[in-house]
Image (cartoon, rainbow, N blue to C red; front, side):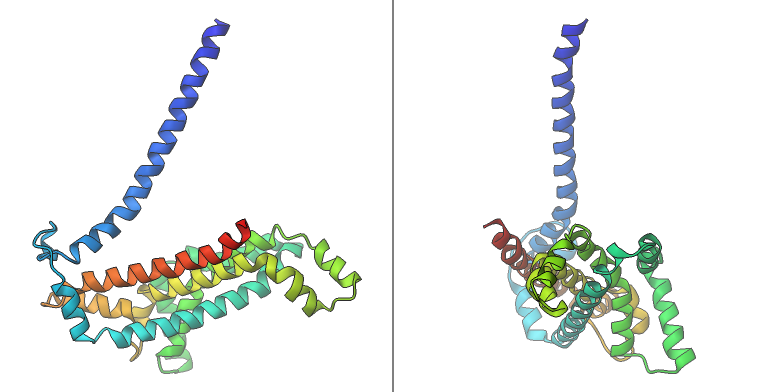
Length: 271
């Protein structure tokens, strides 16, 4: 009986490994296939038909001839940049303190609570707070606060991956050598947690740039790119096919930015 066990175990392990790899490829296909299909349909003569045919660049020409999407795009970029900087800065402050707290679990749970609240409910709460209770006019500030509330927990988690593993003895050694707190942070701590800081900023930027649930209630007179696309898609007019082209361009640009950031950070570290 013992030899048969030794013979069967490698077979089970190989089957388990093959099943895990196959499942991984299925998950990757489910994630990327709709995105690639969108890009393919953006050069189809009939994007709304669901089957690519009569390939053409007509929708891209109409997109650049229209130009109404430029202002929402610029608005989204500025807003996302502000949220990214704020998320990265706030994450640095909090993520460096949480590892040394006595009841850090409770503190972390308080910061992560927005993750478990539906975005539409957060938007309603912020809308009531700004518009009804305080009486402020909705616009840039309400959008910024709503996007920051949604993106910050993700940014904090991204940076905590680095700060929880950071060896504080390095900072103590720098202090023993005469470095000030600022010098220790700038020359010792920041370079080691920089990938987490960049990841926190990227989470803030991407989540703000693509946010629709909060923007619907907090936009005021400001129109972001997701709002523009949502309105155009809901209108069922002749410009709907250009949204395929616009979404494809945004996707390609986002992938280039994220890929460049990964190459700069992790490519440098691998050397």
